[in-house]
Length: 208
Image 1: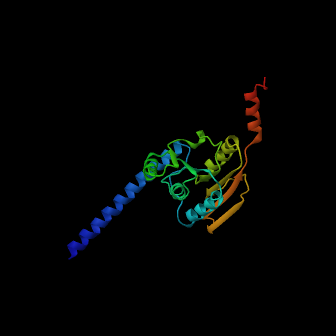
Image 2: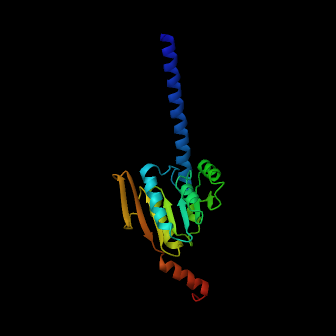
Image 3: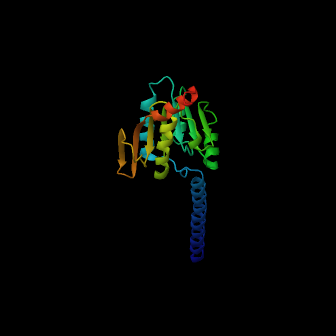
């Protein structure tokens, strides 16, 4: 009997150690992948925050004849795919640079023709016709993102942000679900008119 107990204890110990090692390798891969790709590790939006963000986006787009909704760092598709399945009249676009979640989310979206997921740095994406954006990025990336969006959007865009807010922008809403740990923010971002005026001048040839 004692031998059986020791065997079981040894087995569970080996399993625990193997799980910790594998988890460490996976986390390190995602951490370094995201570090060099200017995006956060593919940690999904889950639980009440996920449901809250989904409800908020639905409320915003459900009355529109068509909307382009973008998920920056779309990961495994936890936000993008439920919305796309429910609203086939809208277009849903995801950007995910880490290979594994990109492949899995593309596979999950194979029967949804209104979903387009790209393995692309979203700092090179075209936001000129975007209506709403969802994102869960680290704080340092959020500050760069705000500047980039203001320069590349052509109209006011509604953006839903999980956990890390824009420091230089007052949100329309801050929804706290479990204190400051489970929280998301809602913003309206307007284009930087000076940038678009400069581009218009260059295109017209009036600059010279």
